[in-house]
Length: 303
Image (cartoon, rainbow, N blue to C red; front, side, top):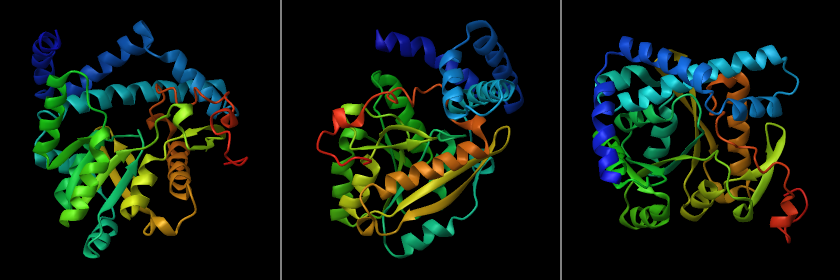
């Protein structure tokens, strides 16, 4: 059945990926109309999230952000498909970087790096980074259940010089690279909501206390990886820029969870600057009403 689904869907994806950008965004406008006005996909979730984190904004302003987000989400979804057919030159033109010297300095010190970023603006086209670094580029991701689509995603990333590693293999791959002296750069999306019973940290995110993923910080500490934040901005439709901010060059000199909290603070900054580009369909605040002490019975208050 999974192969049948792949056979049915792949030709559609291929055709979309070959559309010129002008037609791609015309299609995106049509998808937005259907998704927002006809289907109402996750509109309730988006509206609730915006009301939670922006209680002081007027309803009209939250609706403006909501519509702008859905338009951007449709663009981003089709841009993901477009990655199948985009050329190296087009990708480099549409996703640029402002201060690559931040990474190059760390590479010159023979340091592998953990690049942390959120579901904001465009994370798919950040694979453009592979063309600008000496390190071997890796993307940490959740393996897809459909192995045929998973293989497709892997092949697309590899075309641009990035190797995907599933979350269950990440520690082994990093350990092996460290033993072999392989200079590496690992990209990880770190803003999702963990299960509360597995969370080691609860902290305020956009003014609301929630469980926080600390896996990236754990990897940084264990393997002495500098933590760097990738801040992505949408320049205009179909164009993005990325800037790097060092969270910590020496992770083991930081207080516990300082890297995770620093990452959250930078994500908040991006959201406040242009909230329409955050991934509002994700139920990031679904555990807000739960008591952290129920899951961390031996943790100090305020952890």
